Image (cartoon, rainbow, N blue to C red; front, side, top):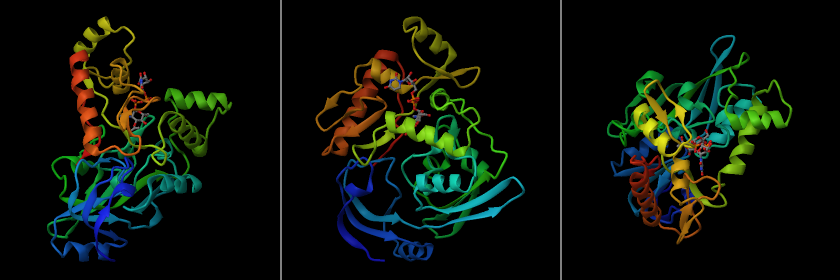
Length: 335
Ligand code: EPU
């Protein structure tokens, strides 16, 4: 383990933003992590870098979590517990589960990032959220280096939200996530329109885990830009949730507005639609812009600065507020 100085973080964030880290260390084990914490430096924890927008240099010690390891243990006849180290790549882990016929994560195929960050924003896609499979989250408290385990119910999971994004932000390092998955009687979820459409095309009537994963991979590849080709962090904003009353007023003005029922009082509106209606979809401004196939994704055409992307995000927020009277919350962690 070696601490390096003045390192570019461009290759360590999927937005591909070029900022400087005052110092940087890659840790490959918990004992290395504990050794680094003993230095009592101001630290910045870097995981897969897939939900970050750097707007400035990081004048701290960047700790890049690269711990690896996956262990499965039978819980009962139909369930298995899988302990995964934080530095494992998310999609590789999902594929590993599918190869072992462990069910629960197939809808979350191809999400960029590492396992350790999956609970922070409760990653989700195609009708599934990771909170539905998380059994517990193992952490180390930064100030004391003491280990603490959070049960699922301790994590206050919500839509793209958890305790680690709020009260405990910057206080704990997630070192391991334990998932509870099914071994046989899988409860498959392919009701999401686009998945059902792909399965119908292939004439698959009783899909297995791999069929669903393949459909999700296909949909993501057609809709979402590949961060290896064009810098991005997936959805930049959250889909706003508004009251039924506010929704009825909007529906009168925009009869075609798409929506999903959240509860008997609330409705979720796709931010992608709001952004497209406001004329940003596919529009390039300097080195940044909103993606041509999915307006909710902001992209870096190559040399964008974080400030440039953030300025576009603020412009979008202002315009949506003027046009539709609703605030758009940023999903990505702006640093
Ligand atoms: N839409 C538009 N124009 C666009 C994009 C979307 O009009 O440019 C409208 C369409 O009506 C479309 C609807 O929005 O039917 C929903 O679009 P999509 O299915 O792509 O889903 P989303 O609500 O935009 C959310 C998640 C994605 C996740 C997909 C699929 C959030 C913030 N985003 O996007 O998650 O992959 O559903 O489940 O909830 C991410 O968080 O990074 C992410 C990619």
